[in-house]
Image (tube, rainbow, N blue to C red; front, side):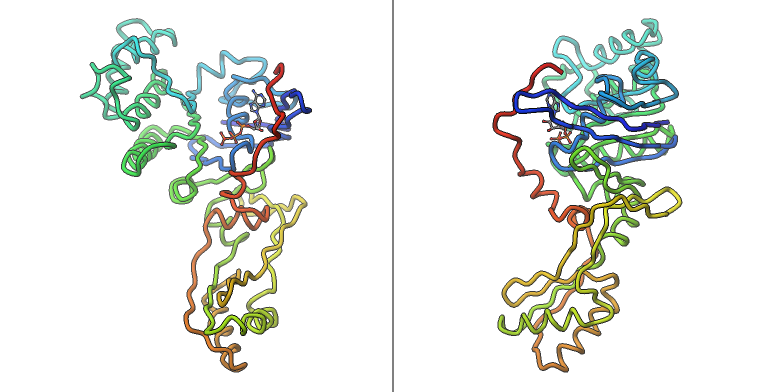
Length: 355
Ligand SMILES: Nc1ncnc2c1ncn2[C@@H]1O[C@H](COP(=O)(O)OP(=O)(O)OP(=O)(O)O)[C@@H](O)[C@H]1O
C-alpha cells in the first residue's frame, strides 16, 4: 500500500537548509495500522505530506495506493484520505452539507454524495449533529467530522496527522474506537502520527519511530520494548551512602549488564533485527538512595540483586519492577526521552524561505 525509497525533503532557510526527512524507506502492507512516532520536528508531518502528494520530495520515490506521488498525484489523492492537524471543515455549511460537498469534490453525483454523506454520518456517530454548523461542535465531534470528510470517497488508505491531539481522554478514546472500527469493518489501512505513546503502544500493530528525519525503530510495540529497552528495576536503599556500593554490585551481576547498549535498529515484519549504526548506552541511574537499573528480565535479575546486596550488608527498604514504555525505547535509542526532545528548540534565526 505504501512503498517509499530514499524519500527526502529539505527546506531552504536563511540560516541554512533544514533536512526535515532524510531517506525514508518504508513498506506498509494493506490493512496495517501503523503509528508514526517522534518528537516535535522529527519529520512526521513532512513525511505524511510527501506520502499524500501534498509536498514534492527533494529526492526519493514513493508509490502510494499503487501510484507514484510525484508523477500521478491525482491518482494518489483519489485513493487515499488525509486528515491533517487542522480542521478540514469550513464554517459555511452544515455538517451534512459539508460531507455532500466533499463527495461532489470527489466527482460523486449529487444523489450519490447524499447517500455517502449519510453513510459516513452513521459510521462516525454524527447523525444527531448533521444539521449543526461545524463551529458549534466540540473538539471531539469536530475531529470525528474531519475523519468523516476523509472517508467520503471510500479510501483504502487513510493518513491521520495527530487525530487525538488536544482532546480530553474520553474524546480520545472515542476517536480511537472509530479508528479501530474502520480497520475491523472495512480493512482500511491506517497510517497515523501521534504524540501519545501509550495510545500507539496499545492500539497500533506496528510502531515506527522517527528522529531527526530518520527512522530509528520499526516493529511491534512489544518487540521494540523487549528488544531495545528492557525492564526497569528500582531499588531504594536505607541510606545514600550505600548507593556507590550498590551500583558496583549491580555491575558484577550476570543477570544485570552494567549498561544495555542499544544500537539503533529496525525490526522487520519477520522479527529480524537490523542494526543501523549509532548506539546509545543506557546506564544504571543513581539518585540519592534510589537506584534504577535496566535489565533484560526483572523477574530473574531482582532476586539475584537483592541476595547480593544482602550478602554485602547493603540494606534495601523498597524494590519494584516495571515494564518498559515506548518512551524507554526512544531513550535507549537516542539517549533522550521523547519529552526532553520535544523541548529542544529550533535555531533562533530559522525563518522559512522558498520551499
Ligand atoms: N515549510 C517549511 N519550511 C521550513 N521548514 C519546515 C517546513 N515544514 C517543516 N519544516 C521543518 O522540518 C522539520 C520537520 O518538521 P515536521 O513538521 O515534519 O515535524 P513533525 O515531526 O511533524 O513535528 P510536530 O510533531 O511538531 O508536528 C522541522 O524542523 C520543521 O521546522
